[in-house]
Image (cartoon, rainbow, N blue to C red; front, side, top):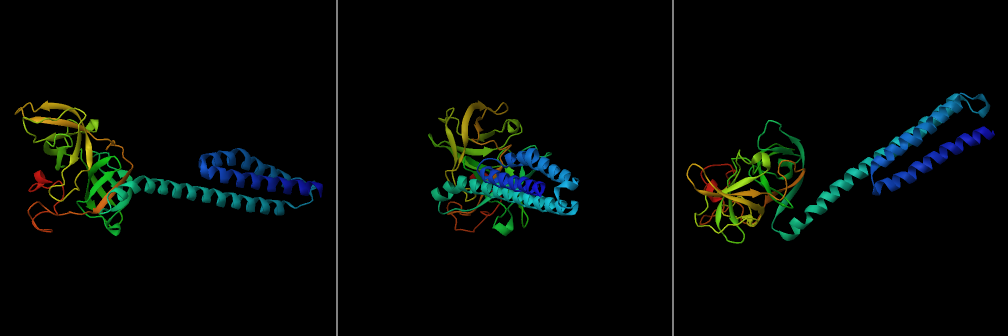
Length: 296
């Protein structure tokens, strides 16, 4: 009976160690739990199986195997809870990250979303998010991060949505230099998309734009809220064909690898074009449209 008590002590000790480890892991990294289970839990399980083959322990093989299976089940359940906790913790961290957006813009209705898929054939780094019409997401809704504008929702299903980034030439965003108030159109360019950059075009020849100036949305056109950061100016240059000036913009977040975003599902002034009543004309047109693209 001494051996019986010994085996039971081993099993009890194992479970206690794993429970304590799980508590610590929840605040650190679940991989520690997995590693410890591999290095400690499995050897103890093997020891129990070996003990089942020893007739001197006073218990039948079936009893020890049943107890080992019960312990294994408890370990698996514990591991599942740690994984669930880790997922919830990550989601809460994302929500806290974007809480400031809602706090600074109480008129925004937002849906926090995660990038779940990227199209390797999309030269302008579009992606799919895990929010759709069920979450009040609509075609044309602006998509941002806490660092600035990312793009817009270009297609919606019930549970997912497609996002086109500002790196696409279809992007036409009314923008201006925050310092000089020189205005233009922020749009993607095949020449700069692989660098994660876009351009500010249709700007005045006598503009006062300088490197490191911050470019923001104008809000004109009712497609994007005003004053959302687009990026900073990294270069001023001239079009080689017609010598018109343009500025290269570097977004503050990498639009090619962004993983968490916010969809602005409604905001004050949405759909309102300057001099036009809400809901009139083409205010609901997607940002890539042509008729009012210059005034967005």
